[in-house]
Length: 85
Image 1 (cartoon, one colour):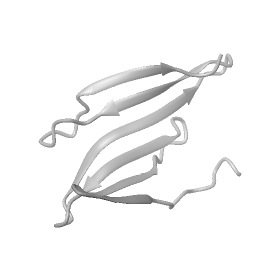
Image 2 (image 1 turned 135 degrees about the horizontal axis):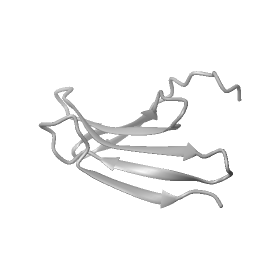
Image 3 (image 1 turned 180 degrees about the vertical axis):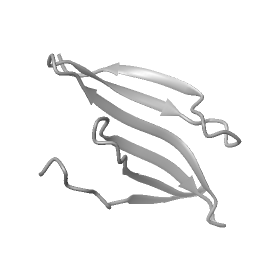
Image 4 (image 1 turned 45 degrees about the horizontal axis):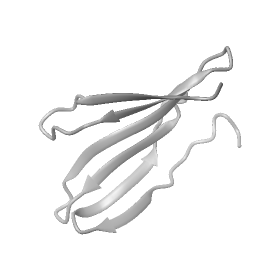
């Protein structure tokens, strides 16, 4: 896959709460996935962003940003997971 290749694929899963949608994040420095919930009326709420960062020294991390307050665009929780060693 080419580094500058753009993704337009969305994974959609029907749930009792609406459509759960996962789609690639657009920042090439932090490849990841946005997760949103779309209700039956088409209202979209961002739930999470899972992104990665590859550090040049061979290390990196995975970061999860949770958006639990639908009234703000800011994330409410941040978790870091160890990347590769």
